[in-house]
Length: 311
Image (cartoon, rainbow, N blue to C red; front, side):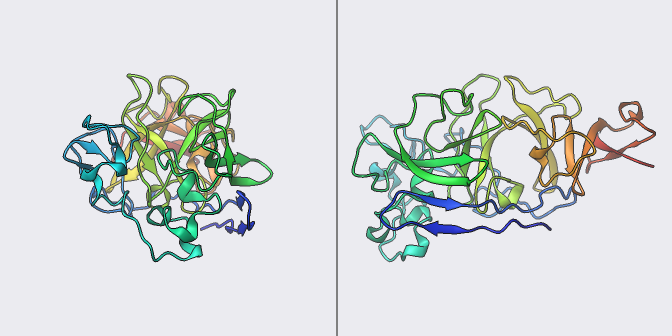
C-alpha cells in the first residue's frame, strides 16, 4: 500500500487551505471491502438520481440545490429535511472538525474556506469576505495539489471541459471538470446528457482516487472495458461494488501508457487498468489475440474482462 501523506496548513484570517495528495493504492483487483448498503456511509455506491431512494424525505431531495416539492424551500431550508444527515448541524464542533458537513454552520467554523464549504451542494460561502458573489470551492494545480479558495465561479456545467473554468465543487484534471464528493458527502449532481445520467461517488472505501477523504463523481453505466466505449469523451473503468466488478464511465482520462508505473486506476490511458503498480492493457476473456508479446488475458472477477499479463 502506498501513501502520499496529507498535510493541511490553516492560514488564519485567509480563505486558503492547502492539501497535498494522499492516495491509497487503489489498483488491487482483489479488494473486497466494499458494500452496497444505501443506509450506510461506509464504502457505498450511491445512485443520486432516484427520487425514491433513502436520500429523500417526502419528495424533497435534501442535497441537490433544487426545490423538488415546490413549496418554495429547498434542501436544508425545507422542514421535510430537518432529520436528514446532510442537514444535521452540530454546535459542539471544534476547529479540527470544520471539514465535516455537520460542522459547516458551526460558529467556530464560520471563518476560513474549507472542505465542508467547497462541495458543489454546500451553499454556505465559508465567510468569503462576506461577498455574496464569491463561493468557497476546490481548486487544483500540479504544483500545489488540492486547495480551497474563494472565487466567482464561471457559469459552466459539471463534468464538462475546463476551458472556461469549472463550477463550484469541481476541480480540473486532464482538461475535464470532476465534481468532488466524499464518504461524508457522497452526493453527486445529475449527468448532463441522456447517455450519462446516473451518478455515484467513488471515494476511498470504494476505490476513489482524488485526495485523502475525497473522491469524485462518475457515471454508473455498462460499458466495454476493452473498447472504452463511453459516450461524450468519457472513459470506461471498472471497480468492485458489493463483491461484484462493475463498469462505469469517468470523465477523467489517464495519460500513462501500458507497461508504465501507476498508483491508481485512472492514472492509466483508456483501455488499461492499474495492476500491481503497472498499467496493463485490458482485454476480453478468451481473446488472447487482444494481448501482445505472448501475453494472456487474466480474468477480472466473474466479468468477461481481464488484463494482459505475461505467461
